[in-house]
Length: 231
Image 1 (cartoon, rainbow, N blue to C red):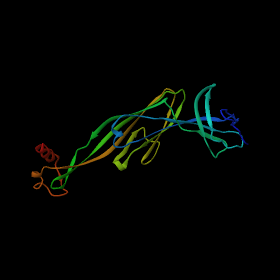
Image 2 (cartoon, helix red, strand yellow):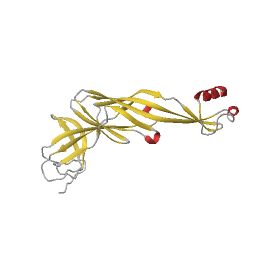
Image 3 (cartoon, helix red, strand yellow):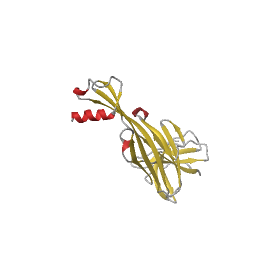
Image 4 (cartoon, rainbow, N blue to C red):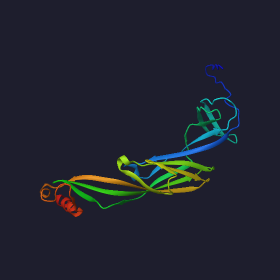
């Protein structure tokens, strides 16, 4: 079939005439790093429409699509080409009616362990336990089933420890939470991470040569005294 479009004019082409089952999918994702794990954030929720059970032996082309509810346009989007003849979906869109607030709950610091690397160099290591709270608010008029993906960062020494409720599934570094919410409902997810911290500091010259051999752990109060004397 050939379609001729004259300049400054549009041509309407029948797309599909069929009843179909309509469902909506929601998703959100957060990947933590050394910076954002210490601050509160607002996450973006994405959604898409999925059509299935179409009748007819024709593939669904890529096309603009207007979603209407009781004759009122809700969304202007595009279809995504699918190899299946009875199913297709739209592109992912931002959904402002699912609000997700990712807040820092608190940080607990373990005892600092200092280790001498050389006569004037000390390495300090400790662990920070980071608590976060993710609050999800469903402000739509629909029941929502959303997939929330949490990603930790072992390469940056940030490790997921536990959550309440527990993850639906996990394949580190990804942790999947399948969230089901009624209209106007609120859910809260509690997360705990640990970050291994390390720093190297140089001691004053006059105190370096007479204390402890290499690779020997030293008391924290010695480091504090040395730093105070330097100041």
